[in-house]
Length: 254
Image (tube, rainbow, N blue to C red; front, side):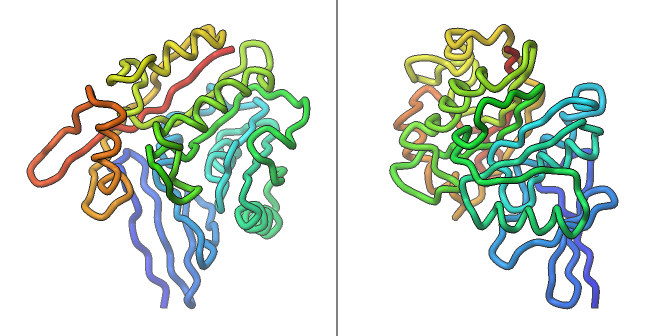
């Protein structure tokens, strides 16, 4: 028996669905049904790109989805918005295998291959690079969550390397947790905005801001004490019985 559940983890204007049918689960975005692998992640924070990426800034552009995950959701959104060409890469071969299966099953015009960030991208350049990298400040943890001790390890790696893979006036769109010191240092040495300027990006713009409820037992909840030790000037917001933080999508222009 088919079961349909509304899936909207951030109370967005847009709505998605999880469909269960004959012991298989599917993620529904617009008119597309994407089968979810048995051990695969369901997109969550990456869905925030859905309201940010539109035909005006995506149509007829060349796109790289850096760290595509199992469902390649940033590449899928780009396809729905009329991108000219789309490539998707991930370090995890399980993700690459599953997304290639979805590409083949649905005849998507997306090229997906394994790469440790830009290592196998060679000298190719793109109009837009999209990324939602692991960025939880952790001493150790899952490769899908941990961004090193300060959470910035992969964000800064992407910022440093992306410019060489952007066309002139190309843009890097990246999702960042607010406690990492995006525009304010939060007690760290430099803000991410300052670092972007030092790396040569011409503009740094926050495109969206969404509240994230921090539930007990979540990775963020379990990391709160460590986060505050790294970013002592940051304050989590408390509403009723829950803490919250914010997730932002930032655009940096070459």
